[in-house]
Image (cartoon, rainbow, N blue to C red; front, side, top):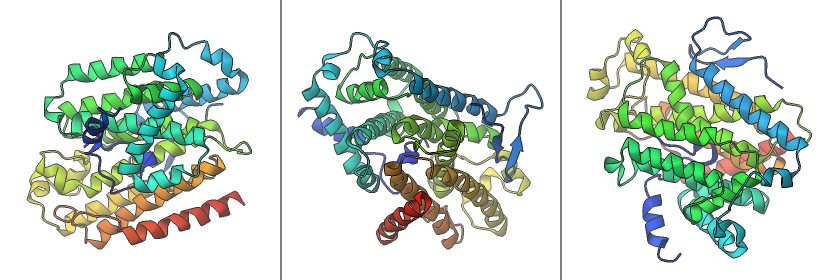
Amino acid sequence: MSSVVHWIVSPNESLSCVVRFMNKNVGNKKRGSSILNFSSGISVLSTDIVNSSRSSEERVYEVILKQAALVGEQKIMKRGSVDLLKHSKADAMTNPTLLNEAYDRCGEVCAEYAKTFYLGTLLMTPERQRAVWAIYVWCRRTDELVDGPNASHITPMALDRWEQRLVDLFEGRPYDMYDAALSDTVSKYPVDIQPFKDMIDGMRLDLKKSRYKSFDELYLYCYYVAGTVGLMSVPVMGIAPDSKASTESVYNSALALGIANQLTNILRDVGEDARRGRIYLPQDELQRAGLTEEDIFRGQVTEKWRAFMRGQIKRARMFFAEAEKGVAELNGASRWPVLASLLLYQQILDSIEANDYNNFTKRAYVGKAKKLLSLPMAYARTLMRSS
């Protein structure tokens, strides 16, 4: 279940149609002092690694520090000197007409399959808007490799080729127009390749792993397939010039939103995943709750299940709360779509509760009316935070 792009996309938008869309159109051509630990369901601050065995959160935090360092480098370097790192750009990256067409096509994909978020992107500056579209499309294409119509034919070798293709586009050698849009984007913003590679690792996990022993394992998976999107997007969304927060803390909030959204998807899709033979729930926590895999496959809502789900939902909401701290630190034009996404996804957890925790046969969703109401609510909250 590698549903990605959740940091920048609203819920209930299908992830299964991008390949068909593309086929249809192809003929037309400073270090922070703490690491958050939610593994026990309680926020814990830690300033030291107490043993040589690093947790997933500590490993991921190293990536955050690297992304923050890139932002710091951009503040003291001229854009021209950064562009010198790009060599032999393809025609699509030097021809304005072709590049504009590539971005427009990315926008069409975003508009068709992420309608609510697309409306939010229209409040951004045109340059940021197009860059986010390009990141969105790459993430969707990557997700389709293991969740799309041809997923049964995808091999580790195919993912290796996709990763090499990623390296090429970061070096200014895109394969197609969608690659060209992203290649241009990463040449303009302090976007690092590591989160993109990590997302591909998430796809590799889905090819070989269908159980997670602990939340530490699950956390790393959630980082791979969703937390990465936050790290990709912060450079484009931008940090407010008057923000007093450290760059690392903003990235950490973006990561938290991706984790929160992915955990929400996991809780929403328990029944669907079970029918595919997959259980994206910490095995040790299931055992402590007195639940077995057979209970999951049987799909009966019991008091044990309700108690277990309450704990899982509480953890997801803690990540949402951490994520919301970072929204006010973003560039003003980027706050609304991000906060709207956060509020919408939180409502999925509300829906699970309203369904009496039956996520075996009932799918929790946010109705159109609630989605529309969430947008002005998010906008008002961004204004309040700005003031």
